[in-house]
Image 1 (cartoon, one colour):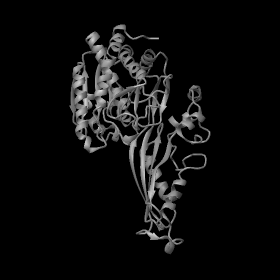
Image 2: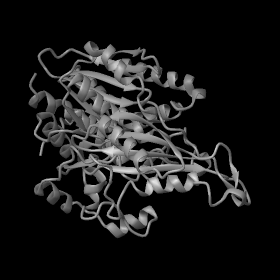
Image 3: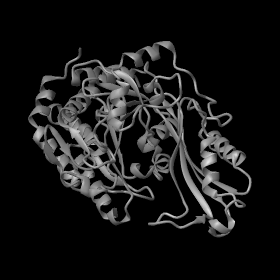
Image 4: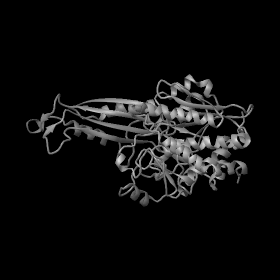
Length: 461
């Protein structure tokens, strides 16, 4: 097993309190991109990141995007060596409901070996791991083993609406040999892992129109198609009893896992009954004949995210509502084409709608799935670095979520990527009491410190 240079390791160990103080400072800035009232805080967080990158020796500035700025820093003092683009985001989710937080969401509170606060792990703490690793190299050696470009955006939590345009605008500036993203989690605290597949995402909003106005259910019940019932019928037609999506063409581009990959999934510790209990359900569900982890990471999904219509107030109001609405979304895998899926689902919804109502479907989103080759040298370098940082060789996993910039890097910059996040599944991201376990934080700093050396030794330019 590779080991981290003793001087670098000692520097990281000595400055742990400094890293925690800096993370607390970042958490204290409520950089909520979804809330226009926090626009100044978002800008302030970007400014602090630029300042911090300059403090550790990077040439840094804020880049305009048409939305929230990107904090950008670079060090290009290693001619002939690989250029590594590090991606993260400094914006955070809203803290609501604030009353469910044990301690204030915008104060980094350390207790029980964890730091709690909005953005602690998603993604401020994981960005800071890289800046700490860069600082360790610069302070102990006076240089980095590779060229570094750090790109920290401020709109990831609202879908990165301006990021692809920024990639095209700053393509020359962002040109690199590999991209490193630390915005993911490991399988568990005792199972370090590298993510090699990310699901894509598309979504729809369905509106079912019935009568021109709400109608008295006594006068008109029995002769008018109820929009809520029609919508329930549509949603019920999306899947069969075995959990398989019934939309023609939906599974185009989806491949079954090879036996070795299925075998790897079976070796991971996973207790279905325990998982169900932790999630508050009586049992797990999904496509019949598939492993739970297979369904979570490597199979597409089609889910109803919300449904509403009719009377919602206290007591009763005996009406046939004028309309009903629902939001649905699909997570994509493999070679599924987002545009074709959007069109196929929209057409199917209209096709299965019952008579007596009019259906409008608005579709959006074109985030494709990304599969990262395990055979690329940067993935092997990341595996060695993580083994040194956490004492165990990592396993390869997927993530059920979608990270738009990962797809953007693949499509626009054509960059090989490695997803080397160190969060934990119980970190409560996007929820009250978000936390970052300190052993993961400090282990992540050591991992990134060695990662740059490993890339220098193993990735050709």
